[in-house]
Image 1 (cartoon, rainbow, N blue to C red):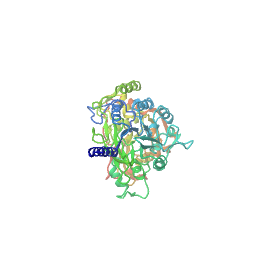
Image 2 (image 1 turned 30 degrees about the vertical axis):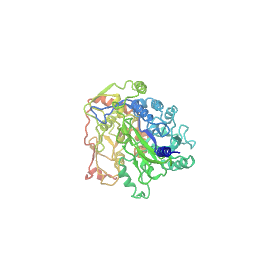
Image 3 (image 1 turned 45 degrees about the vertical axis):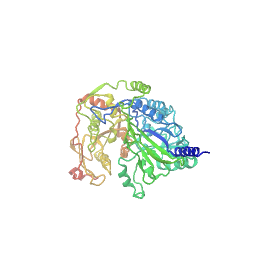
Image 4 (image 1 turned 90 degrees about the vertical axis):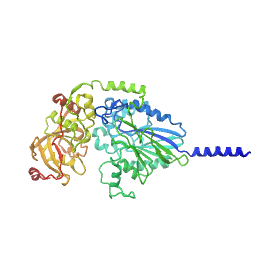
Length: 557
């Protein structure tokens, strides 16, 4: 063989070797906490006065198609995944009980999803009916049927997929806090097991028995708001826990699971409604955690680099069109998919019939941003609750306020955005001492309080737990521990959620179920009190130097 030919063959062999050594690419496109947000919506969180339009499912479909166009199935492929809370929140999801959202997910060909806690808000039967339409697997390794002890028929713990000759395992889980956050009747047929124990069981199963090369966990739990600080508060430099036992009463979050469960390559999380532009990577296990924002405002896109020889992760890439992995679905940056946009619009028109009726006006911009435990929107809601049932004291959890209302005409749609969940107004009678305990419970430890109406509260975080309230006036009058007061809240809190388990102690004969949806109570308030000009006032104040008033000193904590 001539030398020239030998050299040519050598160069060809070398180039083939280099090609075979190139990383395989797996594009992970993901959503979390969509809450029915597949419709077009104005991004008021970015600019309340001149919000850009988000294209919802139509724009998401365009981006998904683009990502899929990059793959050839040999050296590059993709997955489309959802981490739960898929339908409760926008009318198109709530009114159709999730069916319109599942139809959309079928249209764009999701590969898998896991349920979130809010997906049980309309009851297990409604969720089951929606999921029956899904053309993709729904997975959760820690939800079991109470009657059988096995998985509900609509769930599997994991799936195994082959991508480019690499075995990919996807394990699902749902926050065990669902037990604390859902109405008991809605989840009476299922139980939510410890998420860490579930992963410790199934990661070895998919690795050792199924032969998975890459393990992805699709979980409805998220990172702490400040992952770096949270990690420092939990683990030392060698990764050992700083505390001998875990003191938290809530379910494991994604950071804890990434650190404490071996063998996971990637966790796709949610639940927190806070997105991160780059993955959190555990310094010991090297497990990556990614999560996006909520309400269909963005899609996540992370490209995993996989060594073709070892079939292990060698790194990741984020899309060049954005800094980081989160892509905001701006309508003016992506051409919406025409067919999907029309289908969503048609379903939306049916679901939102009558929602543009003007019910009143807002004299100021009613923001949900908290100043301590007050916000203009939160104060308005509790004022509306108190007025609706003529109560002395109204309260709700801080996380119950979901949107702002800008100044000007207010429609039923605006109020739905503020209160997308079907909470009912409930009232009960109790002593002043019990009322005080409600407030003390929500300022205990690191808790930040309640949204309230009808009271003036001053509290100090420097005082001992359950003796932190230094001033308490009700209806402008000094608090009386022995007086009987009428309080109002939501049925969600009356079930003992948001840490208020003491409300389950209220005798049934002292409770009145008004059968009034909180949204309708807010509508009535706007109709009777427009223009609504709520203020931040003296109803709630933290003062770490405050001293107890005489009546508080006389009372026994």
